[in-house]
Image 1 (spheres, rainbow, N blue to C red):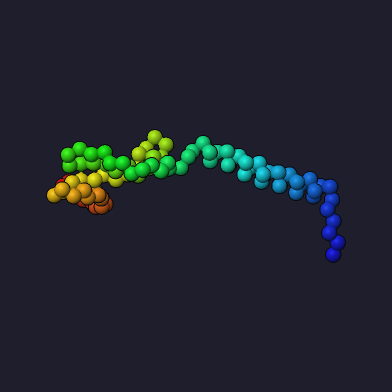
Image 2 (cartoon, rainbow, N blue to C red):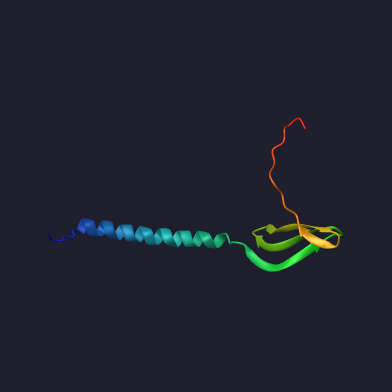
Length: 88
């Protein structure tokens, strides 16, 4: 079996490889515009019984946990989904 590479095949293979390189370069450039979460030292912003503990910043959003003080201890607030009738 002879391996023949014609000029047409060579141009097609080269164009395909160049398109992969260009797509990778473009994708990498787009990724730099949208940084992932910036990690920060956990900071606690608090009132007397309600607080927010920052974990990171994602763009303009603060990522963290709501905390509540019960009997002097800070406890993370969680939410659980529930289904309730609209009439109640």
